Image 1 (cartoon, rainbow, N blue to C red):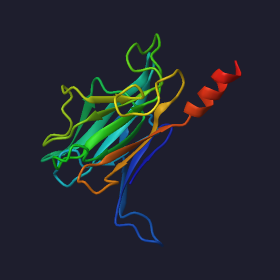
Image 2 (image 1 turned 120 degrees about the horizontal axis):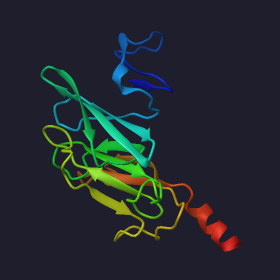
Image 3 (image 1 turned 90 degrees about the vertical axis):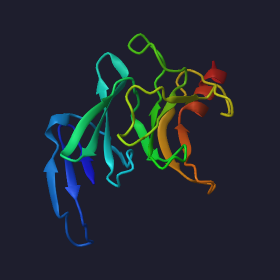
Length: 191
């Protein structure tokens, strides 16, 4: 279990019991301030990588860092072009590696020229060394084929994510939250 807070991140190691605490715990000091953590096996080695999204001044989409287990311990890596805050890990393309889905609900603006109006999600595909930072991720938004509706300012598409094999076909499905979509439509009609 990883606990994040305003100025610290701690990793709590099991086993956990109903009446006791963790077996051990330690601080992950070089991370700094983060409020979210996403965990899952992105490299197929049976050990969960930990993905940390950070807010960054001048980039409303943030910065994505992740810990990958190696033979000598954990290595901190960055997905340089990744944006998002909400996320989930599951095998979306059915290749045996966990894939990282990231939600970026922010609209393009002067601080963030990229993205899609109303928000978007990106899927970074896992592999033997985790997600390759040089890959071109799959981008999905409300104007993508097969996605209902259309992107409008402040929809917050990607504000929440969850993934799992809902229909039993061997591929993880991604559920995307767009909590402001209805509210945006009501505001538009009220004008």
